[in-house]
Length: 246
Length: 266
Image (cartoon, rainbow over all chains, first blue to last red; front, side):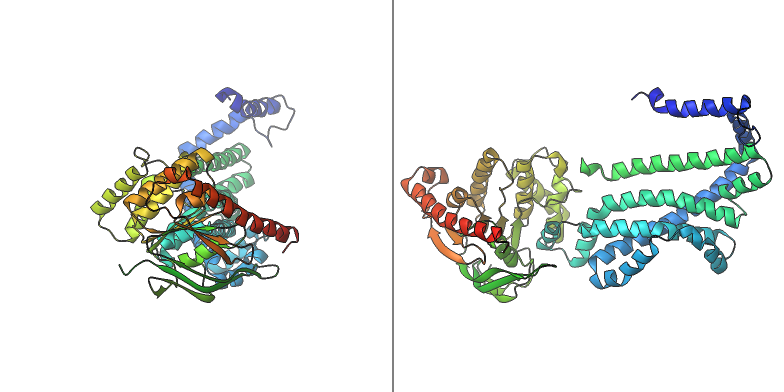
């Protein structure tokens, strides 16, 4: 598919966004035309608000996601390897999985206060279970003959865990991490709505409450673009890490 | 080395599936494999021949009976017993060379020696030029040659082969037979080779042990009597045809029995 064909729907949407409010088909104060949003975006960028809040968001996102993936992947692999741990943890995972993790943001604030720690903790909790389950399934699916081959070559059980089970589970862990990345954006923005102070979510809600709708839309578009870019970059990393598959 | 003879003494094994009744897979198997002998374990699918190999490899616990190698009881996997599986069991995230190096690293060989040995075995199985390929880029025959090189590189006294050529097409299988016999001539080992292919067993082995339908027992042992003759020559002989026919009859009966067992859901 040519680049034009791929981006055609987006271009059409952008054109509609510009034309419809200008023609008065929608109230321009609640949906400002795209050009007004772009101008507001430029203003936010020049003032430094976008960069400082964006950096704060990215920092918290990376910290929460990294923690979630690290702890989640380790826990999932260990659960698959040690039966007693599985017996103990699995019922907890099953019970907590369907719970919307954003409901825990007020609890985090109660425990950790109004600041970055609560945001990071919320993102961590949101990312944790999808990564645990993907690592668990990946590690459970390890081919027993691979484990046997390593043992026959003289590997210890601990070496087998690192050298066979973890790499076998890697494709699933990386797929689970991609889901966690999407979830981390949701938790980032919602925690910033509630906690305020800093971040793109805070910027969006602050501008919205102040009635600066063109700037608010600029904030929303920025979050969408950052989320999209993060996913693209992640996909590229994942593909190169799994280059051996094809 | 204190010899590489293998003995199975009254080895039984029961599979206990998570759901369903336990199944007696092996019943009182006793068997002795001589040093540097090529023994084929021949039997219908489901007769427990692979289980017997996994017990010898130390991958499954020996619950009843005793298996010993050179007098020492088998209690777990070890680099004295190398294994080649039907589906190659290569580490897909490692290249050809890295796969072969893995075992050498476990043997704590010095780096220079490891590199030299890996290359030597890559050359031995004619994979020169494919050192940096991943298994997913290789054909089935090439993958199995990597698996064989990986196992031979750590120089196990005993080679266990679990239907190693079963996933290959007939042409490739024929070539692999030649190659395996060639390698065994240069680096003699005790080999236990599991197969359900009668011609393959007679072509490769010094002795063929026929296993019964489940529960697996040793039904009979046939001496092939190679007397140092090369395999292609033996194939043309009258004895070869007779032995194939005899073993074919013997296995066929067991295969029919196994089929009845399966249709009865036992």
